[in-house]
Length: 207
Image (cartoon, rainbow, N blue to C red; front, side, top):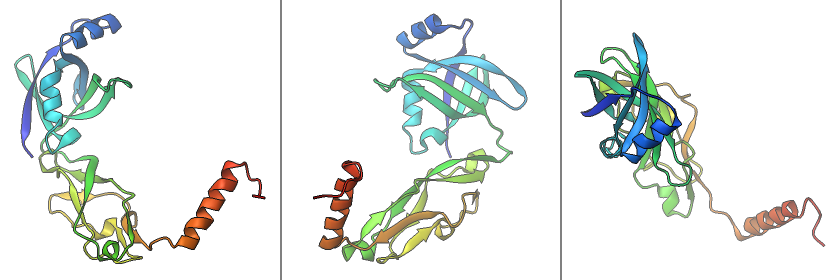
């Protein structure tokens, strides 16, 4: 996985007022922490940081944080956003070591065409991420879930995902990734609507 250099400046003051001024200047207040170091309060350029997050790696992009002339390899651990505007308010970075394995969530992407869907079945995709262990430089951008063998009633589980040479999937292998359910008949649809109406009426039986 490619690494992106991101210049960071230490924050010499703290408080809500200072953070607001930082954001108004196009910066994102942040903190970087990890094994063997004291937490450091920093700020990064918002535009550069957002650009890094928009790569295919997303939150798992490897960042070379340049602080006072030295670089710290880090991953984005947590983002805080404005609940209305969605703008970045704060970021947590965790220091990582190229030689030490880490655990993180990796997106699951459905690929292929299901014969069962072509026959009228409905595809359900309840699992969007899996827990993975690997070296920071071997983090996959995503893991493919091939549904091309799924007929109606078939299920794809974590154990069916293609294994990677450079990573280990820690999610329970029996966890369902995708399944194809049979199409709902008109009678079943009517029954479901009636049940929903009863529930909405507080359990009263329809007259």
